[in-house]
Length: 100
Image (cartoon, rainbow, N blue to C red; front, side, top):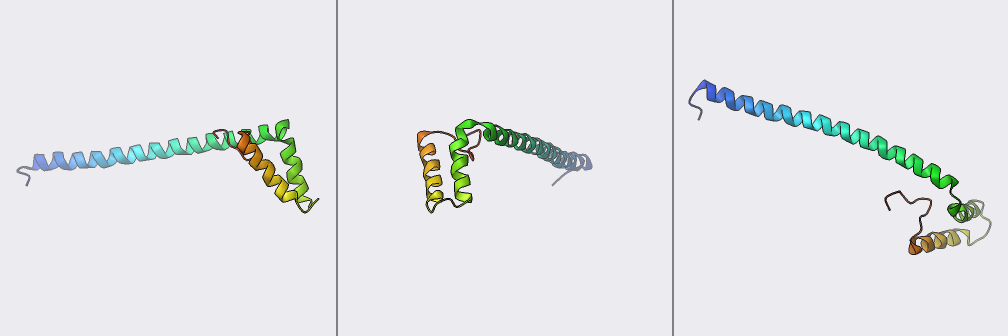
């Protein structure tokens, strides 16, 4: 197949470089993914903080607290209806992400 040792050396070197380049790109991509995961985790923390202090979610918080304290038999149903109503109107809920 290969007529000389030089051709064989060139081909094997090219294969070795191809694998080395693939390994390098894979390690860099893993670093990019870890940085992206950290950024998204920080954005989620920011979202949780901003939603905690935002008064537009007060009705949702009250409804969830009523369900947790079992204030009425229909507290869970009322909470689910509130969430569905907000979603249908295009409003955010406490569990909405920034990108929705």
